[in-house]
Amino acid sequence: MKQFFSISIFCLAVVSFCGVAVGVLDPGAPLTDPSYETTILEPPGESGESSITMLQTFVQPGFVVLMEPLGNWQNLDPVFSQDPSHWSDVVEFYTPQGATQSYADFWSDVEGQPFLSDLVARVLAGPKVFIPEWGNAPNPLQPPIDYVAVGASTCTYTYHIWSDVPEPTTICMLGLGALALLRKRSKA
Image (cartoon, rainbow, N blue to C red; front, side):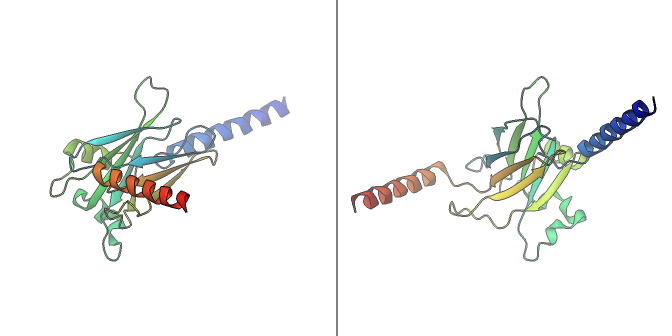
């Protein structure tokens, strides 16, 4: 009986710990094993619409807010971060009711226009992480922002977030240039 009681207490402790751990996970953290990696792209153009990325598993809901670059990165100050005028982009992680996987919506700011008030209210009320945009200029050769969310069982979900994606025409021109270089290289 004493051994049963000890095992029961241990199981309750593990369940309690896991319950607490799930509540403090960063947005986008995987809720299941194994680890994953994906790319999230900003929608091209200045439409203000979102782009949706299907994720490979269930993840912790919440928001990753990319902050506009400033000279000394004071924009990561908690009070300063709450001002949506300093936000560059927002990635929202969510799971629709009855879905078999989670999704990531990439919301981009439109120059000179604020984010939708509904989105701002959801970000300010929900779990969120603020990270600097790190100066991703409209340069397709600029590396993506890597955001790593760690799950309860140390599995990770690495997100390669491409902010300020160039227009489709620019992407096509870069692709054609790369093909020309490959062709030239194969002839040599």
